[in-house]
Structure formats: C-alpha cells, structure tokens
Image (cartoon, rainbow, N blue to C red; front, top):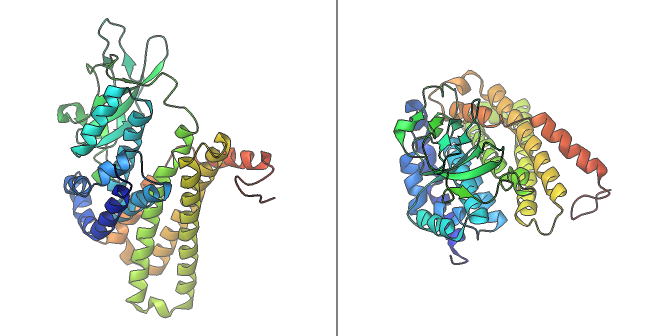
Length: 363
C-alpha cells in the first residue's frame, strides 16, 4: 500500500457521500442490504485502504465518520469490516494474513460476531473439531463474506475463528424486527459444522479481549455514531435555512446547542482515535478511559441533537419518508451499546486516579 492510498480512498468517499445518502431511505423501506454501496466502497478502495493497516488515525476516523454520516447501517457494516480485518492483521498466521490481503483486493467484507444466545457457540472435541451453535444480532448475516466469531472449547478456552458468513441458508433475519438499522440485515447465523481446526483459529485464546485493543477499539463505532449525529445536524440546518425557523431566536438557540454538542463529540472521538491508534505512546488504562468517556459524550450529543430536531421541526420530523426520521431511528438504535453508565463510571474512576490528563497536564 502506498502512503497516498488511504488519502485517495478518502477523497473518493467524500465525492460519493451524497450518492450513498440518497439511497438510504429506499434501503430502509425494503430492509435491503446495501450491496451497491458495499460494491462502491470496494471499487473506490475504501474497503482495502481501511481494512488493512496503514491509514493514519485521522484518516480512519474520517472514513468511519463519513460513511456513518451517509448511512448509519452502512457505517455499522463498514466498522465491523475494519474491526474484523484488523483482528486478522494483528493475530493471524502468515497464511491468514495473505488470505486477508487477497480478500481486501477482491472487495470482500469482514465482520465480527460475538453476541450469542445460550448456551453459546462451542468447539467440538473431535479429532476434526467443528463449531456448534449460532450467533445472534449478527450484522450482515448471510451477506458479508467473513466473520470473526468467538467460541469456547470444552475446557473453557475462548478462541477467535474465521468463519464463512455468506451462506444465506444459515442466516435468519426474521427476528430483526426493529425501527432502525434495518439495512444491516442483522440476524442469527448458524455456525454448526463449520471448521474449528487450526486453519480457522485466530491468534491465541487470550487475544480477543487483549487490552487496550478490546476496549480501546470502541472508538471506531463512536466515530460512526458521530457521523450519524452530524447527519441529523445537517438535515436540521437544511430545514432551518429553508424555513422561517431560522428567524426564531428560541430555535436558533436550540440549534446552537446541538451544534456545540456535535462538535464536542467530534473532538472527543478524534482525540480518542489518536490515542488508541498510537497505543505505544500512552498507557493502556488511559486509552481505555479516554475511549469510554468519548462513548458517553457521543451518546449525550446524540440525545441532544435528536431532541433539538424534534422540537424545532415538529411533526414533520416523524414522517417515515423524511430523511431525518431515518437518521433519528438509526442513531437511536446504534447508540444502544453495552453498559453505557458502567463505561462512564469506569472512565471517571481512572481520571480520578490520575495526576494529569493523558499527554497533557490538566490538574
């Protein structure tokens, strides 16, 4: 990869953002997987440039943010692709990394599936071990190409494995009855019978939750969420400048608050990205605290911007053919990440224990 490859892909992505955004309503209406948009990301080099290592923190942040701003469902798929590809790049064998390079060159899409119904996914104890069980809430089940999944051995070891994710016969989206993020085509995926041998296993049993990559990597989905917040803010501004709302001081004040909240979230996540992507320069616990705080800042910004849109636009914001209704529905669901209050509490405890702000004395 040349040094200019991520920059060129990013420029192309900016040029196609409006095209992706224009397709979002139709995809939501039909609950359709964004195949054309995925193909576009492959054609302009985004899947390869940001699936492989080499992009700077700022470039990756921008790519995730722009895709999320265009279509949050696509952003969720793209973030999963980046996450899955990086796990292979970090922990894969030489042959697995060569396979990743071929897949990225061919525009194949990765994902990460961890959530599972009881009793979970197991690895059989046969001479030729296979997976037994299914994952649920699996983004792109039956539509993406590869998924990094977790499974346990009889002895309790938790492995990552590279699994085929494209077989529609194994996928069931019937339970994905949600108001938002419909185009992710999430659902359950039956992994039973897929290989769990050495060629499929990734890294070691302790690698999946290795810090700071495990908790610190959450900055990537917050970058997509920032894009969703900015999408609502853009649509709100468009409404105001084309209506009498712009002359109302109360509505202008609400817009100002929403603008400040969105930009605050942008600043926090950008700083979290820079720290997490340069993890050799910052203590692991400081990276994690920064990312966990950024999660809370983005969540609060999302709530504030969505509330401002509802109050300023009124009833029109809730019509299902309005782009802002889709943006709000998608963001409302995507913000539901695990244990947000515990994440902020964990971050606060770390900041209280620190004598200085990471990399910059604050107190």
